[in-house]
Image 1: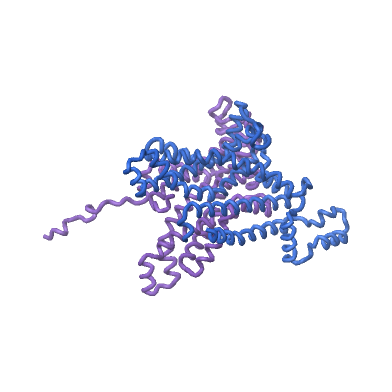
Image 2: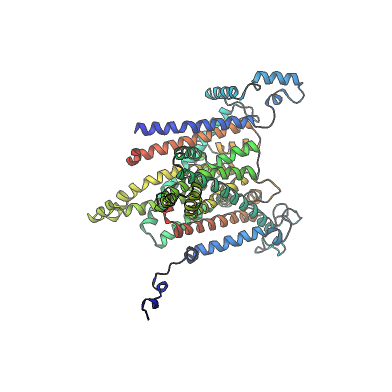
Length: 313
Length: 295
């Protein structure tokens, strides 16, 4: 077990390094000379040269990269060009809301997707099955921004049931819940489809296996057969799917946060890119990439824990 | 008179229907294919059939579509916030959206499948290629898109490049798994035994037997790529005004949702229809051609 985890950890090191290099390149190729920006447009060339020297911009790339890594280790990502606040502070304030949004989305969409997928598998070929599958194909085909706009239009504007701008506070407060409801609903709607599909095919596969037939033969109720012997084994691929779809979910979150003006990392990244705020962009992309690597790591380890066959490979 | 001559062997053999007949027998898939063909045709012929100049604004702003009370036949789908004809913009926008998706998926698909096929063919490089693919997989398309746009600035090209790169690892994995099973077949060994060169073996024996399965995967992927591309344009990171692109058009309609919802709704529905048809056709193709890919 430990070996599996260690192996997996080792595998993430080159990825991590790649992400760091990308972040470094991002700042390097950014247009404009940082020394010139700092000195101001009217400064004489000698002053600019002096600042260049002091910032170490004339050093070889490798030295600069090492210095950048050193700063990164100390949690120094520079300052935002727009707000002049430290990038780390800005990012820190945005991580919590994004995690809350993810939690609020997954907490309803995964159970919903698994239930729908199981129902479709149990009543295979029936009208229910076809309706659920049609719903899930439609779900993966709808642009997320359209779902957001329709929900805003109906629930927010027409019926005035829920707020649709910003964040109301932490998740455990009433206002926080009210504000997160629509973004979480939108994001969840695009996630139900893949989960339902995967659950359906996985349950169908498991229900064909011998141990399920044995369970039926010994007279268990259909419900017990499906829940205890079918679903439990069928959930393993579903967990992998959640890992595989993390990127899909992330893309959805970026759009959702932007539309609902929800102060998370996704909106921060889009805003930073659009305003050419390179230090903030770099920081946001680094955090998103790290989070993604972490999710994949956790899912792989979880997979190995749930399915002992994986460890032997 | 010999009896064997009279037996028509073709009539006795169970008639195997060609894959496209099976596909067209699936009513949903046939309909999806038809709609998709019409959409592609409309987008390709946009300069010829568009009733108005898609970039020319007029005073008739936010005109509703023809089926609403104030709609007119001059602007069948109404006009947008700047008085530009929606139908013409949808035709041109579909063109941009389709080009982004098709180029990205083809470029990424070709590089990805070559990588996968080579990896299965030359077992020496397999571990290295797969390690590379694993690394690429941990970098989702949207993040790649954000990073490239951050470096090169918003535009169609960085979006296409990001989507193409993001297609490579998935495609390489699928291509490899298909190719590995083909490589185990006897005809590969037979080809080797008669002294075929690696190149002939690769192109004539391996590639030809993998191409259809890979095409299915690419068609299944197409919808997702269109969605991500449209989302990036919606965020202002892809196509730039005044160009018409469906995601960007939906974003422009955001401000008019209250008075003229059609400006955002029509492009969104267009994206939905394209992706839905692509997904339905892709699913049906897979079921007909290669049920192994199911899952």
